Length: 255
Image 1 (cartoon, rainbow, N blue to C red):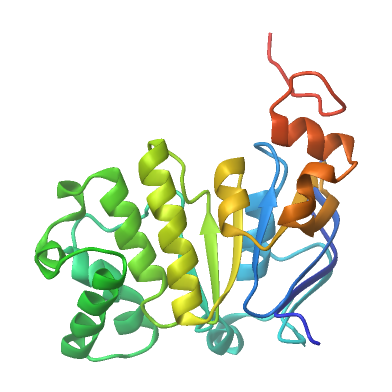
Image 2: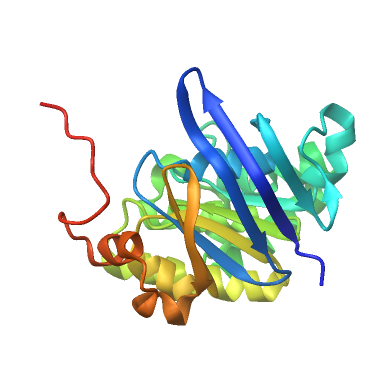
């Protein structure tokens, strides 16, 4: 079966710093894969490379079997319509009301009329547990958890085939993080999407994923079903998931 997303030997460097050093990863259709790893290990660069924000120096990225590694401009537009994204900080526009934030991609990217886009936005807000009166508020009037819900509503607004989640629980208390995890699971299933997330929150990673891949020093050092991560037999994975200072992963500490 053709993978929904496939990375083959993807490399990316910035000057002398090698960030991705031959990433191989396959994400099956309608599955949920989480990439774990410490800060600065290349998780965000991996997502940006799939999105086309960055172009790999070497390697191939395929979506539905199509090589999209170097697609640019208008040639990339049909591909971008397959994607939804929940950004780490919410990335909401303070100058726009909530409904317009949710509908932004529909209006700008899909050419949906404003009235119809507004109806869809309110429907998607309901799916993430927000009432229609929230639609008219400014993002600055919302709590962090509510902003995250709005971001999720925006990510699913156009019923995307693939949704990317960038550190979805960062900055949330444990209860709100769990609520967001549950919403991610239910909304991804509801839309029938393929999910690819990046996080260093192991509680979230375990809950929202079918499979986990660990990125370290620019390579995937382990990948497998979530249920098997506790018996991975991989010292890097064991150290990371248990949060141990001692182990093969050395953190750069500035004096």
